[in-house]
Length: 128
Image (tube, rainbow, N blue to C red):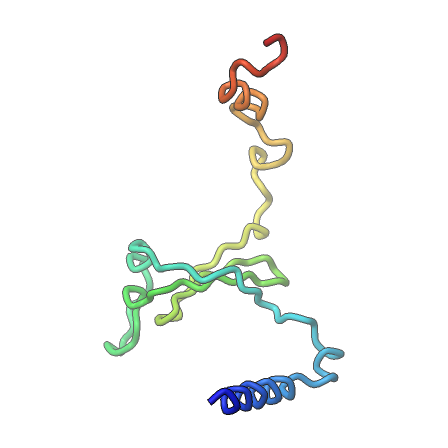
């Protein structure tokens, strides 16, 4: 049994190793245009998205999605969230408009880190 498992693993490794040729790495980048951000559970609101209903009743809708796959377009910065069964996507691109003034650095804070530390440990500051 162990010999059979070892042979199977060695065979799979050889097959996978042969899938990547030396010319591929010279002509294309190390990754594709879309980079994976993550796979998340489709929450209740995902199924409430106002998407065009399919004409075929057997086609999956957002209510059928169990996961949302999130990717980023490495060329434009656009984020895409797509349902795993429906294929319906929502997109967000922070680079299409200038950032609002209140979102630029330095940001305005309601409290500084030192204020929070003093609240958490009131007797450890200077003079105590």
